[in-house]
Image (cartoon, rainbow, N blue to C red; front, side, top):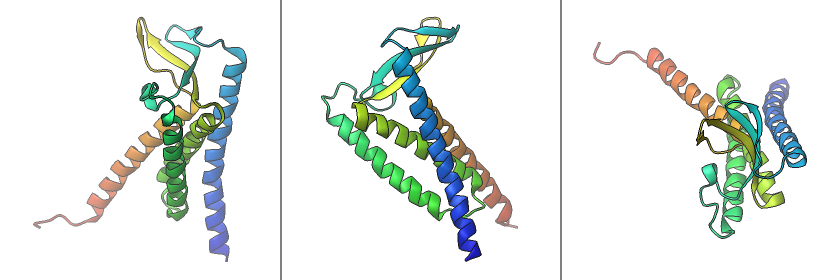
Length: 173
């Protein structure tokens, strides 16, 4: 029983990280909705604005003008992905901390944007990075968490690959 309790505490910690991402995401979006006018940039730095935008599509507004069906499609994709990630997280070994962190960040971000789609029919974006006349697509805290989580997942895969290469004997010796 103590091992099971430790496993549940370990898992609860990672779900708490996902919940923290969700809370920060929804809080910052609520601030953006309350204090920003749609499409009107508020300059913070020479390369950073807060600009309220609505994204009805996927990443970089992919399929944003598809007629409405994309709301339910992307909601279903996010829901299925969230369930898969939660199950994957629950089945991880406790040694897989980097992968667990990456999955937690991705899970929190996916749920944050899913929440927007279900509540508003679009995702609320407000962080605008630019240089002179070049603008990166506007994004939000959930998108940032998913991106960092994906980066950590790639790093984990590289580290695991190196670990396996070091553990296996060289062929041909």
